[in-house]
Image (cartoon, rainbow, N blue to C red; front, side):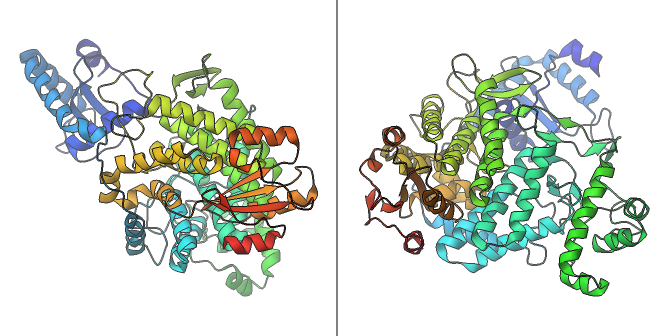
Length: 620
């Protein structure tokens, strides 16, 4: 194979996480040419980058009627030798057909009804038995659940919240969740969430942590807080560098076998925990002699009722919960001696930004300073290590080396992270950083002709097409997050230009969103916020005063998807720093020396309040 490739081709291997711009273009080509996609992806190009052949999963040699790569390459070489002009003509035709789709040109009228259409689609696709949407394989897609939480709260729709709760609890109970060491795997291969693809991704765990935090804010059920804490424990313990950055992923395989690291037999559990506790643990977590996965077991709680189990076993529910926690700690310590799956220790700016968002949200909702400190440390790592001398954001860091000019996702996700850190700490420097990042994003990525943001910057390597992405897939798209950032920054700062650009962005992708609203839930969250009442909540008071901290903490614990929160300190220097970013708060003052709350709609403020519970009632 190597000999054939080297003789007739220039072979280029692309890391899709380092060069998502290249991956996005040629995966779109493959899907259009073959009707399907996947990795490993093989694309053959003319010398000027234009594709004329694409496919996935080729065997080396012909197998079961499927051509092998050796045969394919030989035939392509012969065709190129015979008539290269014909091959070039075919590549030109392919690009002519695909270029408009990749540039995502689809301007149209924005319809608020898309939000209702998306909700109807999720309601129809909902799995009443196991949660989630559709059939196997099942992906968590947390931003879909975040959309439903907002829909449920803003429309007082209990059904939307119920779908989220059923899905979150089903995923947690299933084998997609690592009950021993915490964290979620990439997806479930079955409808029940039992058998995962055992790979763990940073972005999945970041987005899921956010979702469990928000579910706690909506329901005040401690279970969601506990799950979010455990996910963050996994990331901070296993996926964090000494410098505070977050690694990208852990493989599914170890010792050449998928899932081996995570599987247990009854004998293994009993050997570690002892006969009595081990036997009870196995009954609780579905660990059986026959196994639930290739003769071994994925610990899970599918169909298990904690209280009913405790009644059968004659143990108090609270006592059993403590024993289970301790047993999992013991099993985890034993599991640590196994051969670990490979850890991808690349540090990706975009995924790190998502983790910063998750930590900031958790720190704010749970009043947990260690999470906020971890988020701040990760942001400092990015500022210190993932910028070039001109201050341009870079996409990847590994082994002391940063590379690749940052993409839209890097800028949009990091802007989101800075906004969340501002609302967690009320340090104006984070709001200033968000504004600065947003302005650079507009300068480097905005399409002045058609609206929306390109995937790579105007200063980056020129590829055969400059694509835009708006589909919210495994992660939200850069355009969707940028739209949300624009609306929130417009509300935080009073800069109406941001909201105007958000309106242009919605219009730029109207055709795409209208055809499939369910595939654009993060964008719909931005649309929901843009078309809402536009409320700003300003708390005026001394940063150091315990009463001010109590008022801010009370508000931070709430789920307020339609409200931005600002703290105007009474310290003159800090107040001036904030007023430079948010001029409309300059004249707001504390009443009678007490922490004072201003609720504003479109920057027109109601009478100030000094009773936080009354302010919350007004919000509701």
